[in-house]
Image 1 (cartoon, one colour):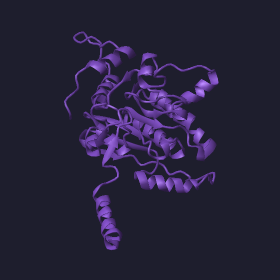
Image 2 (cartoon, rainbow, N blue to C red):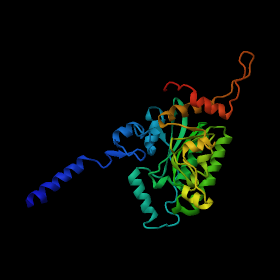
Image 3 (spheres, rainbow, N blue to C red):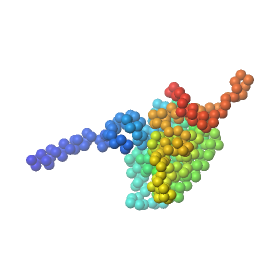
Image 4 (tube, one colour):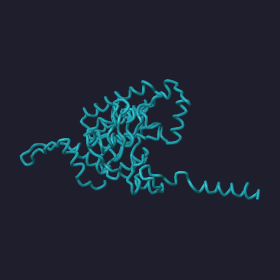
Length: 313
């Protein structure tokens, strides 16, 4: 009996552990249903049935946007790794190492340059799994470099925002990225290139107070939490109960804070249509061909929502 309990059973347990990965199943936060991980991954991390949009990693997001899942990684400037020598329960440098090992990313934002239905675009993706997608010096440099590249290439810039806010371990150097990124967005605007923001779950704090709300077109994924301060903090401050669905994507669209709420499966064709509409040069005024009328922002959004998708390049 000793031999069975001490040797055989532990070996069987170890075999089962090896054959059953921890992430084999995912529990939907909305419906509670258990879903096979591979099915969720194949469905762009949208839970079949409930349509709940799970968080999507930076690499998976870039694959879902660029033609043939191919792009050039944009080299980003190096920053001082721990300027404040910050430490809480563990050293900041150790937190960075852990996040890099877990996500295979250098920091919270990855920038790519490639084609979207044949049109050149620069795309920046914030990964919430890297320290909550927090905005620090490296992330700020990534946004600025991406915007500079969009100006150089005369291309639209698309950013997928997902963040808990500024990175507290970098103090004022983190907060400084808010005006820096805002100025960089203005640089793109002066170059007359489109700036499109996709707000994903969650987008909060200093990111919401800077580049995430400055888009020429503001898109949100269904159910995304979007706001500056948390709902509980607001309720305690104003001493009132907030309305149902407050700070969710659908509520923001209803109250004019975002232009569109777009299902993840429709994001790629919607972004491609927007880029075509916003970059189309006006036709020359000739006797045979009258000048094309300039579309209003509302008309651009309407056209992006209803126009048929172009064939994949």
